[in-house]
Image (cartoon, rainbow, N blue to C red; front, side, top):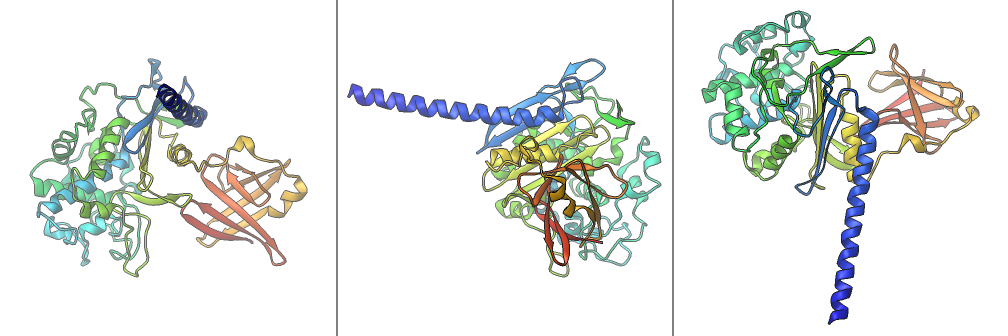
Length: 450
């Protein structure tokens, strides 16, 4: 009996040691990814990773305030930008479940004075960016007034009379304007301001105690200062009135609160399983084709594992969050510089936890000029874009016209990874010439030398 107990104890100790070793290995590799992007004396970031509903990694990098030399910390508050759209979408679905609206409603049912130019624009169209309404951030009249406060009703004057870019449901085109209108619908139906609704109906029930509708005048404990880059120097980010961001991007949060948010969605705390299905389902256009967007989330893949994800960006802040439903992996990274969009590091971390890591640039092989020269040229792709591949001293580069060159590296002689991205170029040379397949996870396009 003692021998069996001793064997059991030894076995348990061995398993425990293996688990600890694995966790430390993952943690070290995640640290390596983030340390390359965020220096200890530069603008910072906070990263959180969960697996099976449990936080397995949470760490901070760089500085929350450069002038005061304040280190970043895990509980620092950031503007989350367009991740706000998830909350807006769920607020709409909550009202739907209360019987106060339907996503098939014509928006004029709730905003009768909104000019839809003789077209039927539904709440569904606003949620999935198929309304055709112009994105107000693309209008030249908008940016010069970013410091000015507006009521939501007055702000829509920027875009409400603009011609539609296409008939509702015909195409997909990202539009902050659509989500701005959703905020007005939430206010009209609930009788609360958008911020009051989100804070009372979502943040409070979920104990998201460090999340709020953004406010410039209020003292917000542990708020990170936001930065931008200008002429290769870091500067304080420009001021923008939060009335311009509203239900399209004016929420603030922490990485841990966003983890709580993700868990609440999985557990159907706020909405039913039927409603949740809507945020995991690709939108179908009028012609039957599918988009890679649902209600406030983009739909993508990491090495054939499905993801739902979204970026966020305001002046001074950049955020990203991705969730792998089948594997129950959640990764989010918040940055306090709009110059450091964390999409790539978030995706690389998710791939690492998935045990399908992206190739390391440090382990690339060097090919001779004679092997690489065949890939040089200007490629025109199916989507109309152009990429230029050049060669200098055994190093291939790729760039769009009038943009900086990026190194491309390889682990074999045909497929190349683009520096600092999750994108690949695969070359094929035949008697008819050289072709190139550009792949960025779910998206693929073929190009040919002009």
